[in-house]
Image 1 (spheres, rainbow, N blue to C red):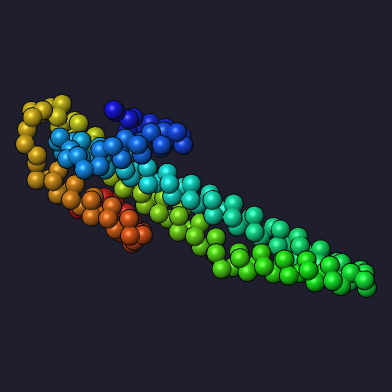
Image 2 (image 1 turned 90 degrees about the horizontal axis):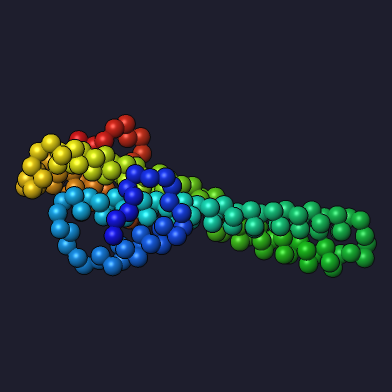
Length: 184
C-alpha cells in the first residue's frame, strides 16, 4: 500500500488509514533503506497530525472553560448587587464560576496548546528533513544503479533522523528550536 508522500494536508480518514498501515507493518523489517525512510516520513506526518489535533482540542478546552466562567462570574456579580434576595443564587453561581476557573487553571490548556503547537512544528520539520532525503535518494536511484548498496551517508542520515524522532517521542524539541538548516 502506497501513500502520497508529498501531497496536500491529510484528512482525518487519511490519518486513520496511515495509522492502520503503520500498525500492520510493526515488527516487519523494511525491505530496503528507501522503505525505511518512507515509513519514517509517514510516521512523522502522522505524529504531526496528532499534535495538530491535540492543539485544537486544548484550544477548545480553553474557550469551553474560560467563557462560561467569565459569564457566570459576571452574572453572579450582577445578581448579588442587583437583588438583596439574590444572595444564595449569586453565591451558587460564583461557586460554579470558581470551579470552572480552577479547572481552567489546573489544566493549563494554553500551555498545553503551545506545547502541542511546538511538537507539531517539530514533527513537520522532521518529516521535511526525511522527505528531502527521500527525494535525494530517488534522484540517486534514477541516475545510479537502482540496486546499489546502502551508502554510509544514507545510513548516517537515517540514524540521525531516528535519534531526532526518539527525542520528539519524549517531548524534547530542543533539537528543532532555532535550527537554521539541516543538521550536519
